[in-house]
Length: 394
Ligand code: FEO
Image (cartoon, rainbow, N blue to C red; front, side, top):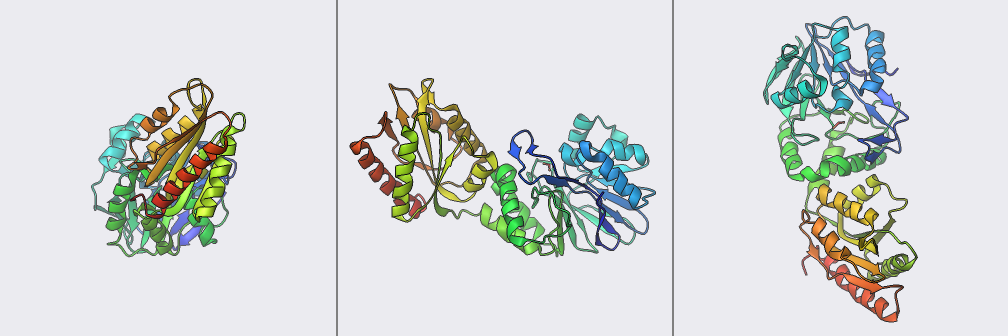
């Protein structure tokens, strides 16, 4: 049970999920997560902002009982994904007169996902306000953070932005507010990388939109509440900018040691060139780690052995992920070790069609690398480093 006061008449009543280790069966959660829900007591009406993952509904309901909540008039739904909307039916059973307040798109999703009837909804428009008496909610449509229907809700009198997934972070923690600024930015970067990165253009518009509001607290639906909103807004501005770091990510797999030798050699050479290099063995890497590095890396090199007449499936899967995440990478290439042939290079190159990158000529090495192969790799690293240092424009 975790009822925590945000300001007078505004409480956090969501659930802390200490044990969850995977989200969407894709994203590792090394530190668990939280599904934040907030209750706002106006002197006339009471509103609940978002609910929780259905598995944790008892926690939400117990928190409402702890606060002795006698009525909920509005269930404000910022986002239809079930980790925030999934307990709406349970809250409606407890408070049958409550109305689900959301936008048209979110409403259509909720009808499909939760089988809710039309008459439980109040549909609102972008910029519309809803009075709770002495408190006023204003709805700000912020699409694509994370889905197209996602919106934020601004509590005018207390200057709190309830931003749902926007600015969120995955971590189970007992404190309500940010206590460790460095850690929350790392957590939020991981979260941004995993689900927001493909929508940078939209996020830029959303950041512009919220600039019109004086914000004292950002209360997302995962992770702690920011009492200094500027730290996370500044971090987002950097992540969505076109700036990259002089860094090269090398996701790789090695079956019999040849690719590993190639990657180790390239790593040493990048260090000599003064370029940060991050070789990631895909056997032990998690998706979040790769996504996080893709947020600001200038270069990526996929290193793979050939197997089954193509690139290794783990490298193919990482290339697919990189393409789907649409990072601002500027330079890319492929280095492969083959036994008798295959089409791995073309296969990976074709998978990266979403990336606006300059491709450096790949290096293909037959078997274990020999002296002449190391020379080729040295030249490759030199060319790649120069492009990375100049942001991909050589
Ligand atoms: Fe936290 Fe997109 O749901």
